[in-house]
Structure formats: C-alpha cells, structure tokens
Picture 1 (cartoon, rainbow, N blue to C red):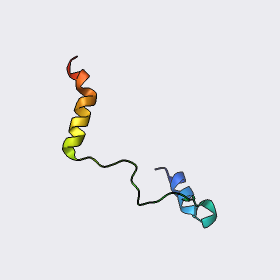
Picture 2: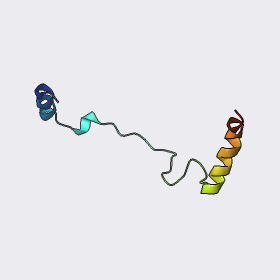
Picture 3: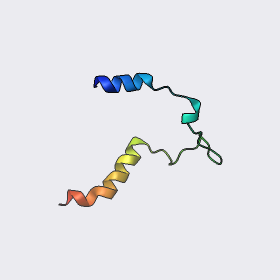
Picture 4: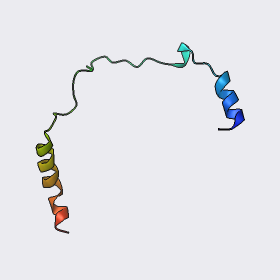
Length: 56
C-alpha cells in the first residue's frame, strides 16, 4: 500500500451517521430458504440433472 493511502486511512474515522440500518420486517432469521438434503439425495439429484452430459 502506498504511503498516501495509509495516511488517508488513518485520518478516516467511522461514525454512526455513515451507516444505515436495514429493516428486517417480515423476515425471520430462523427460516431456511431451501429444505436441506442428505448427501445421497443431493448426489442423486445432481446425477439426474446432469446425466445427459455423460453421454457426450
């Protein structure tokens, strides 16, 4: 890093007004987007989706 960049970073201070809180209404942190799969269920799903590639 150049000396000029280091000096600029040292002069910069982070204050609360630089940040904005993002709302989370209607969202739950406990919900998952997709149902989890077992290893073998995922292997079988990928094999079915990509089996045509084995024929090339």
